[in-house]
Picture 1 (cartoon, rainbow, N blue to C red):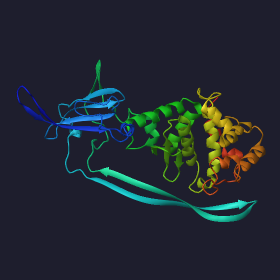
Picture 2 (picture 1 turned 90 degrees about the vertical axis):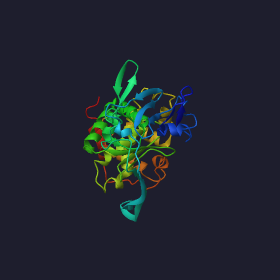
Picture 3 (picture 1 turned 30 degrees about the vertical axis):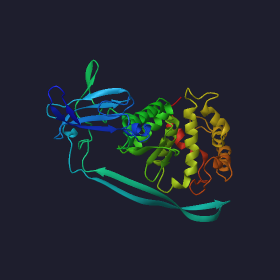
Picture 4 (picture 1 turned 180 degrees about the vertical axis):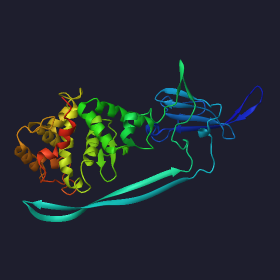
Amino acid sequence: MIRKNRETGETVGFLMTLIPNLSYIESTHFDPFKKNSYTERDKKLNGYVLYHDMDGNFVNGWMYDNGHIYAINPTEEGNTEFQLRSGCNWYTIEYSTWDCHPTAEWESGVLTGIGVVCQKNHIEMTWSSCSMEDSSGAPPAGDIILPGGVNNLPTPSSVAPQAKRIFRNSNMAIDRWNSLENMINKIISDCLGMSMYNALASALNGKTLIIEFVNGNPSGFTYTSSSISLDMSGESNRLFHEMWHAYQSYQETASSYPSSTLNHEFESWYAQYLYISRLPEYKIGSKWYDWYYHSKIGLAVQKFKTFIDAKGNLLQGESAFKDYLDKLSLPGSDFRNGGYQSTLLYQYDGNRTAAYDFKNLTNLSKNCQ
């Protein structure tokens, strides 16, 4: 930018950098600069506007966050993490991996087929040799000027602490982290949800799961990469379901988990039903209530409550519940037709008891009313 004083004729040059975040870019249909310039700002802008002198030294800047504007001022020592740098290089590596495991199909105790199930994973890694952040991953230094006082910029620990306890995604925008945090806070306000969250964190033992939001695809948990893909609905019950799968995976071995994926779905769907049915928005006429009373899976899962209560106690005995689960595992059943048609991807271990299939519900609900 070049600015000239009309009265004195003095000319000043400086650099202006606009860094919109991902959600804002998506909201502008990938044209974030159309309504933003030196003299004009979109009221919905989310991101940073930074100013540097012609030598690349940081002068000042602004952070725009959901209608709030925070000043970023230089310290006496200077904001070294905001200095412009030269010689930055970007690197991208793309590769694919295959995760395979043997399968077997049985009918009436007779081996009828064997095979191999493989899943292709596409992985892309991009990074630069320099970054806006320092090597510690801390956010830019400086003060945010708020009406009536001064606060510090949000730090990694202050943004979505519950979410970041169990999840990681270095490229996810702050508003997505906040959305994830809101969902987790809703989950842990439920006794079963709190128990599941704490048990998962304990099982991770300081490690974290990969989390990402996906547009146009359903939510899912990938066992081989310990990752959760979450749809854009922002519904906590869907995150609950995938977190339950993550916890289940830590109670299994590398061979037992993929060979009993349908068994895991039975328990996850019922746990999700118990959670969502206790939410205030679950009422007659709501979309969630209608789904459980009009969809194939919803009707099948809702019937679980006639066989097992919210604490994992069997109401009609092992045999009756096991017979029901065996029927749901058959091709053509309502549960299978609800999206689990593949007997290779969604394998059923018929040797497990019904009580064992719901052992996690029994363990996690023992301190709940």
